[in-house]
Image (cartoon, rainbow, N blue to C red; front, side, top):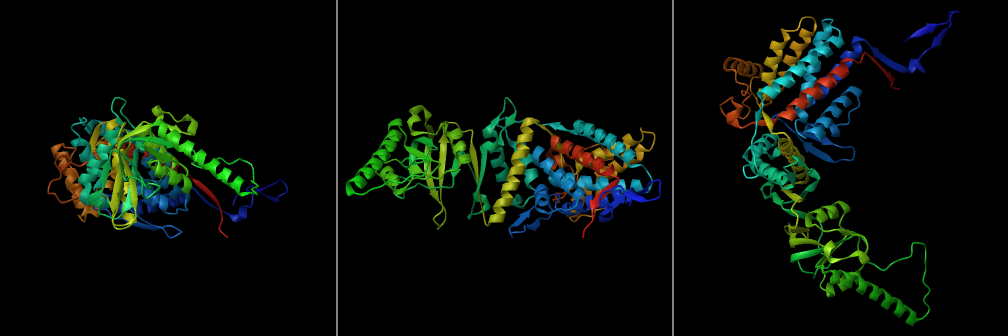
Length: 535
């Protein structure tokens, strides 16, 4: 540890409790950090691509998650090392920004770190490596722009969008019905998209799941599904042309806010109290009827007396509906959320073409479907599946597909998948390296080697000989000058990704390269790690 001596030769301490701190410095620190980053990337390598494997993670309280989504795996893994945490952040930011490509971005960063390690061993300064990487990432970024294609689609011709979503879903568990799920995702996004502003609000798409049925039963509902049923078993199960009153006030007699008690010493007083309450309820129900409501959706509960009265007045009601769902219902039906009975008026009611209750299987599970709404800008994707994990994983996969569809609406450029974009960039970066004198060109070449990590991992996971496959495809790209040749993971028999219809969004790929380079630069610049030692 750093000791300093004063003029009398007595040592004094610079770092507080320094004998209890462990410290790595110089090359050792960089190597330790790189090893940590590589370890995280190694875990995710096997789950890349259509033949990628899934990971099963058990949380401390015994919940099991089975997933293929890079961001989810890293979120659930309890990572202790600081550098490994950076990798987790990396995939999280890719997830927030793009929604897809969370595994690839970590694999990419791991490969860059691996290449950097070799350069550091040759004695090249980390800053020079970082600068070289920065130049190379710019070259790759611009090269992606050049090889990208514009995708023309309209509300009638959604095939291009569906194809891209199918590419995303092909690496997930749900790949056997990726066609139907991709169509559902695209239709859901187009239903809520604002095509003039090129903006999509994914909050308007609600994803609900229910265990039971099979994956093929997953459906898109142009409306809202609420996991509640009518408050009284004898209320009608199907209401057509419903006018919905959306209330956030409780259906019960008013109570003073402070503590109170009512002294009743005679039967007559009790009778009057009861009549008063009943009258109060009657007025409430009457107010709803007067406004013309045919269905009441209430955020709070109501006691049995109110329930009974509503039943007699033929006013179906639903109770205990959550705040988020209320908002979605209000958006979908064009109604207003009413906080007080006094404010109910006919123009604040929402309208829906049909409200029906649907029961599932042999159990008493019922859900309420609100369909054919006045404003169909809120939709629900309703997932069925064999078990809870399957449904959770389908939700995550659909989230990726929704994000891809949203990105395509924002920016309709695509590149071809299957590692073809990476190989093409690698060739471009390799040629760019010759134009740079100085030490940076080593780093630029290493960047080109690191780009090959994604196609290598793809071919390895697909059970092909990785190096042979990669060199063959690379040679083919150079020979034919065709940036669409990639790894043939599904054994279709052609390397041309254009024929296989494997697409990825351009912004997703660019983001991957930029984010990975940034994180690697950050890790390379650390040369001293001071941590409190373990007892």
